[in-house]
Length: 284
Image 1 (cartoon, rainbow, N blue to C red):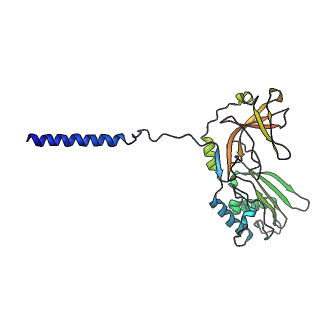
Image 2: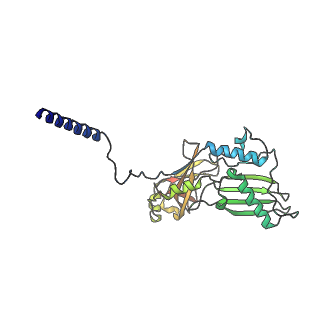
Image 3: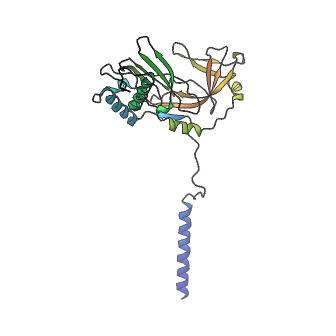
């Protein structure tokens, strides 16, 4: 009897020791859930094969032709939006109304429908496009320039524009887009990023620092910022940037737009999150 009790106790102690060893090798469960990682910054738009494939299909549909292996010639890198129309194939705005000529209102509706039908070639939600310029030549041909306004702050740099030129017979003679796709995802990331530099601190941050800019010839140059340059902080903006060493992506930064009165360049951009000076992306 005593021998049986001893064996039972030894078995229980062994089980408890084994359980303790197992628990020691595992991570304790956090009752509040997994630790939250900080938001990725800057927001990044990467080259995407699915996006490019959709643009190939959209271009073939626009031209009423089979998909071409040379479609990339007409598309922009990263965004896969339309760079220019191929010379082969005629493209027309849709007909709106039954009259021989469309009214101004009908023409604008035709352009709206065209932008929707072009889909990924435009690369922007049509509700984010605002007509910024509308020129009508004496012969009746149109130039319509749209600006993309998808973010909580103004967009800077060469991206975010859509241009359509067309004749009175509705034929499109030029169609190009530098719009930015997937802006909802980018805006979500930017909204989660906390600015650490207030407008009142921008001047002090800049004075004595080296700033880069692109000259008229497209050459990147730098200079030291001084208090004599008449620093004036304008507003918070979104700057797309081409990161050094990466040709397959665009970065999006929250930045203070700064005006200079006496400097090699009139405008600088200071990252509002990490305090670096940045140069808005130019088109590749």
